[in-house]
Length: 126
Image (cartoon, rainbow, N blue to C red; front, side):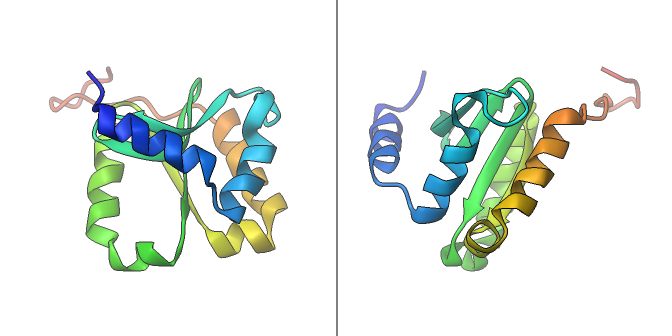
């Protein structure tokens, strides 16, 4: 069950996006990029991610200046999302504001590239 306070916080974040988040959303919404359907400010477990697609299983994070001081938290968060089957890709606000075409090219490549098969602890493909 999702935490109601997280859902409320995600709704508030959708209502007040940053400029880089607005630019990404304009490019991603309505299956505009590679036909992938993205949701913004999506709750996944105990986290809110900036953009998420279930097909392919991809999370896009837009990192502002505050992320430079929370590397351990971001590492833990990425590990959790990967256990849920997501690939995680991060872009800085500067990347999005200064090179949106390059950012979208990377995202398009991720959409078009299937993930590597997972290996069980015994080394077998799952």
